[in-house]
Length: 248
View 1 (cartoon, helix red, strand yellow):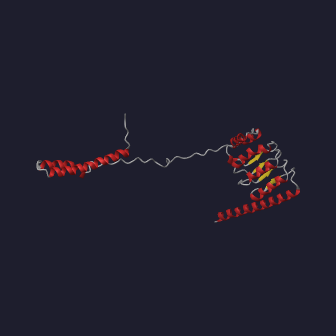
View 2 (tube, helix red, strand yellow):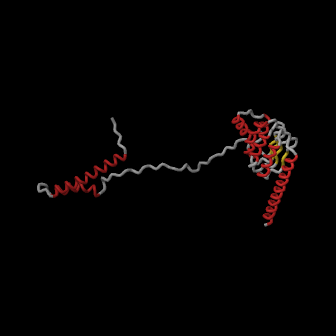
View 3 (cartoon, helix red, strand yellow):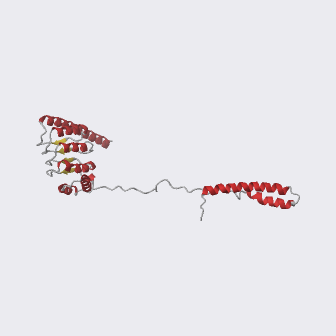
């Protein structure tokens, strides 16, 4: 049977033996130094042999330093960011919702390799419905350069417009939305109003052939005009700044 002695236990035992060695050396020195039967040269030689290693630190027990594990990651290792194509984004979103992908939308998105290159989406007359528009909005969220989306004649109702507005309200570049020829009414108009108020970048809206009444249409029209005026003023200010930079 083999017994394994851990390093701390071995170290304590070595220290104890070293201390006993010191005691034994001192006792031996006293006995032989004053013993009349032992020649002085012999006792002196023996004591020197016992005590000299202590003074020379030749029997000192020390533990080797523990190896230190590196805590940081290896330098120079870059992380590659994989860009997912819009078509793949759409198919994934459909799979998560348990929906069959729309073939017309797949054909449209197949033209783009990256979401950043999508500036215009026209899925009119595809009849996506309230559920079918949700995977498309997952793509819209990733297309930061998208400026226009056309969803006319898709069988959309108020719930689909609510989802569309929740996506468009934080979009950085969307300017025009067309939801004409859908079964939407005042409930959808209320969501569109909040969208125009919270995202003034949207300055064009198509709501032809819907059940939104005249009162709501006028409210939305006024908001669109205000957003368009603010956008024009911002563009003019940027142009003036560019002119100043060019002349300086």
